[in-house]
Image: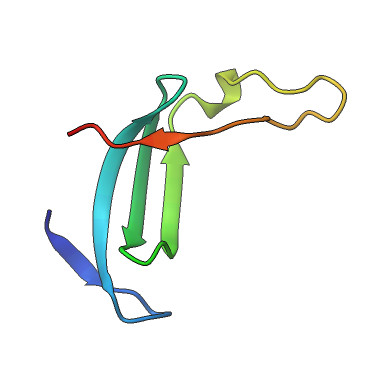
Length: 66
């Protein structure tokens, strides 16, 4: 992993990450190791199943592919 700068909130190193969520969507983030996100992009998010009454996605999960 290559450091992409430092977090404005806690000064921890910031890294570019790409993982796959539970539903197989590609999740790309730029965040520090303390969990402060500069941005997050979930490819094909509009295809996730949402609760029809609230129009809210009930679960987005992350796992590490090592």
